Amino acid sequence: MAIGVKALPITFVAHAIAIVAAIMVLVWCLGFRGGLAWEDTNKNLIFNLHPVLMLIGLIIIGGEAIMSYKGLNLRKEVKKVIHLVLHAIALILGIIGIYAAFKYHNESAIVNLYSLHSWLGIAVISLYGIQWLYGFVIFFYPGGSTGLRSESLPWHVLFGLFVYILAVANAAIGFLEKLTFLENSGLAKYGSEALLVNFTAVITILYGAFVIFSVASQGPAEDDYSYSAV
Ligand code: HEM
Image (cartoon, rainbow, N blue to C red; front, side):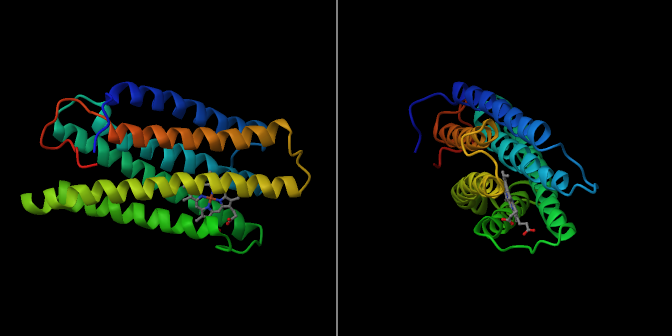
């Protein structure tokens, strides 16, 4: 399935939205929440690494990895390496981001894995890792047979999109959860910080939507590595 729209302009809009989303989460965590730290007596600064790394790492860089096949007019081998390296960076930053949430909980004597967000988060990062490993082994090194690769490709695209949509949805739940905690501790419900957090979630979802549009749109001239499977 491909919609009759060129991918390139869609990816440009997505890049612009990504920059806005990254600025918003940084303004929130640096400007409103006191900054970022790996070690500090103020444990909230350790938590702040979580939304920053999950949004800029897993969601934005992961989205750029997905779009790289449609937005770049390069040789298939080059695009493949860009795709897998960007996904590896997204995965590593996501793992560090989740570690930061656990570190914050452990150092603040808060239990782990009690929320829907945390359960879906573990599912997302595990499925993302499995998807990356399968893709690496089948499409890159050592590489499956031609038959296995062409059979695997539509599954790779479908499963990848599923995991990505779940990640975007879970990021939105994360913003909701944190804002609810803050509001329950006295943060103004219509104050500037509350609006910033809600709009960051809206912009995150908008970015996810443009990533999906780009997948369904028409990339540069088809070669045997471009996918028109979805
Ligand atoms: C797709 C991106 C995300 C994933 C995969 C993810 C995953 C996780 C995981 C696994 C935990 C559990 C940590 C523990 O139990 O010690 C957690 C905690 C948390 N995350 Fe996220 N997260 C994501 C994005 C976000 C974002 C953008 C926010 C926004 C502030 C956020 C807010 C929270 C909060 C408040 C907690 C602590 C409460 C809880 O465990 O539910 N998360 N996250």
